[in-house]
Length: 367
Image (cartoon, rainbow, N blue to C red):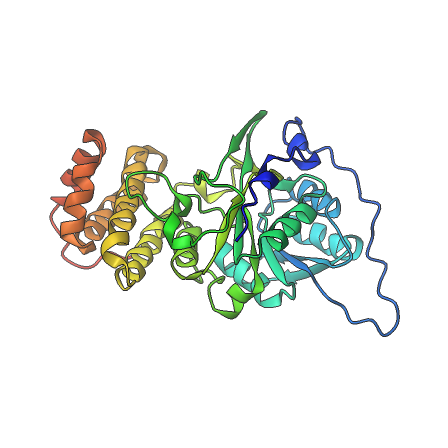
């Protein structure tokens, strides 16, 4: 496959937009005015956007979608049973946003379930994701589609801009080779460094429909947090080709009060179920001996991270976090766990070894 490194070096309008201070988005000239008679509708890109109680941010998100509209793009707006004004905002968007498809859940199912609803509705040759409180640079999706068509691979991963209050930071895919098609499983290791599987943002990329047909794009239904982790590992173990490109255009709003990353309730503990799945599925892989150390070490690092900020959890949830994490450590392959702890810094290793020695609860602990 030809080297596409030159693609990543282009200073596109999308890249320049990343330095601006606010989502000052103008509507595009193009609109979806309908098809001529007897012309079959072909959808090039399906954009899946879950929303839940984001009435404050949804208008910016929808404006940015409008600035990315094209006659062969569809925007699947999934309301996950919001209790604020979000459904009214999306109902208006269905009428006013070219290519909009509005779906409403009667029961809240979480981000993974909402994304799966969108995947099942999608008709595009390619799929991508956006969260309902984030936004895009104008024209970003057109360049994103061009990148995957140029490279011809199963999926493409992109950088993004993290926005916290007025601060903006560019976050790069932890993969040095840009614009080059590779085997995804070759990008999982090494175990002791951040790699492509640690950059788990579903919205930072674009995915060919053949991944849906192969059963690789759906998320684990019902996961309320860390839903991207089993998903990104499965993609890297089982997809055949991928690439990373230096294309900026997604603006990730960090620190939103309603986000689960900011809430210390029991839903946060779903990370244990997510990483149990990563370890269990990786253990059956043909390269399990090579890949398990990475899966186990990452699991340990996430447990240590949560324990290190345990004060943000409700007291009952904090106790449950400790109990469930201790049980999780005992479920891991113990020889691999020993090696993982030996490779970690003293503070994290000591914290996890102390937790590992905790007496087992009288009965099983469930999330």
